[in-house]
Amino acid sequence: MKTLKFVTGNPNKIIEVNAILHGLIHVEPVALDIPEIQESLEEIAKDKCRRAAEMIRGPVIVEDSALEFHAMNGLPGPYIKYFLESLGNDGLNKLLYAYSDKSAEAVCTFAFSAGPEMEPLVFQGRLEGKIVPARGPPIFGWEPIFEHQGETLAEMAHEKKNKLSHRYQALFKFQEWLAQAENRSLLSEGDPI
Image (tube, rainbow, N blue to C red; front, side, top):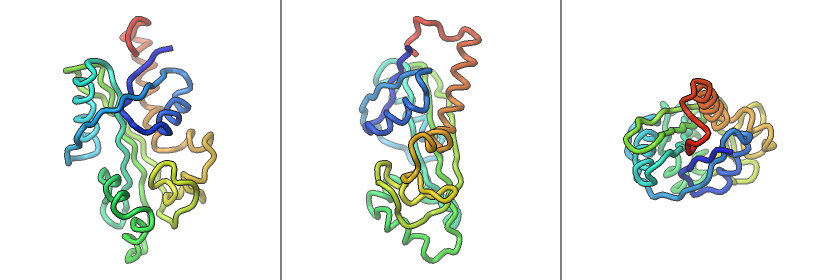
């Protein structure tokens, strides 16, 4: 089985990503402290990926998640981590009290680099939903307040979530790219991924 370094300190994310990838590729965690630039989702992911590839001197994948409130023109977006740390899920809900529009979009952006000095490729998934009072276990930060088709992501069975989530959609695109790359013989069995 091929293995790829995945920059994350979240063991639950490793489990979920490996479950979604179904053994096509196995991700192993590597904890790196990489500062985030203030930019678009895609540029944040690319920058983190470039830095990570330089730090580990090899192929790497990074992920950046965002939560975009439609009523707030996409905020908090890529800064959701900091909003969540400061406000918690209840505070995020309170941000939308003044708005009738509770719709939101969960966004997951993966960036892959084959190694140092290689331009990262970006794979993005989006899931429409709405912001609701927290329901379900808080394993993945804001997932208890993001509802899609009557269930929050935190309430969903893992199997269901892993077939529709924003993370699944991004990883599905990555899987398609990997399969095409292997079909074009760009990756051989001796390659690190």
